[in-house]
Image (cartoon, rainbow, N blue to C red; front, side):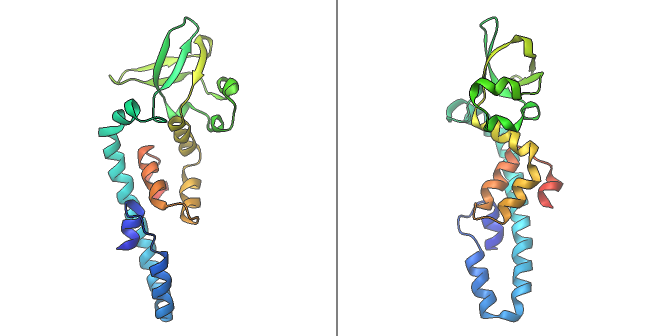
Length: 180
């Protein structure tokens, strides 16, 4: 139960309890580890699905009021400012490591902006003067590029697994890849 809860919302990792139970009954260590692993995967799926559906309902509030989640800014050569979220499938993950002036060279054009009214706007390379991509979009690009690698590495590091499961749900990485 603890492994299930930790993978989606609970702050205490199951490792300490698992170690104590395995040391207390060494003949059952494999059973405990297997049950803990299965519960962790099921809990991760629960966290992924809950956040995926919850984000659809509250995501715009985050983009409007929480710093770092704000909408990306594109200044067109005409001087018009366009605010939106660059479609994560079009953003190269190298943006995280590039200085701001080089950002335009690391993008895949055309850029697709998601609008609140559901209409997407496409912008090409010739119309962009300045570009400001926020951390939220950059993290989304990393999830698109390195989906299974991020989840796999998080399973073997001290990074709280629930952070990865929740973020994977927000960016809707392939669910089968997430489970594996």
